[in-house]
Image (tube, rainbow, N blue to C red; front, top):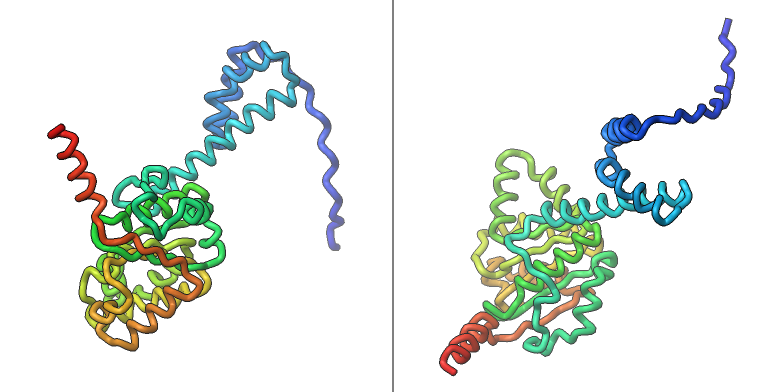
Length: 273
């Protein structure tokens, strides 16, 4: 005979137990550990004291402690996203002097900082000589994107090609390509700095193709597009890479004057005055 299933009855409202303050604090700490609420555990008592002074309702007090937990979780998530991106150093957009880059008006930088281009899957290409701020911009924009909650990964071209070659040798290429395909923004630095053999160029092209018109790539290069053939060896492959990285892209030329040399000269000038 098939047993009859009955709907669970509503739980009766439990009686409220008047706990002494030490017992109440211990119960809060125990419950927060079980529920994974470290900020509530730390802030429940001080917020309760402030709530009593301000004569907040119980609901307002609960809103305060839960908001504190949410804020701390968001802060920890931003820190985790930046750490996962593996930036080599800390760079911020507010530290970048746009006055030395005529091709980058403040309004354009502000738009890029929103990350809307990442959501649209648009590429970003930074071109310019060494020391003109390409890597600074690349890292700073990547950091802003990570702090906004996006999955970001920074890597140099040589390091990425080496990683892909090792993955291919270990029969793990599809797994690694898939991992790079899932991130929201790939920050690819030093494009054109090293010569890639045909196999390395093909592996890099595979990553670019996997992300085409779907997920953004931001890259920095000290070589104009006309010289990328020296990096990718095959002119047709170089043309295909340029085509994919420039379609609907934001292309910024950071110029030829080294920021580092300019800063060094300024310091020397200040020291002699």
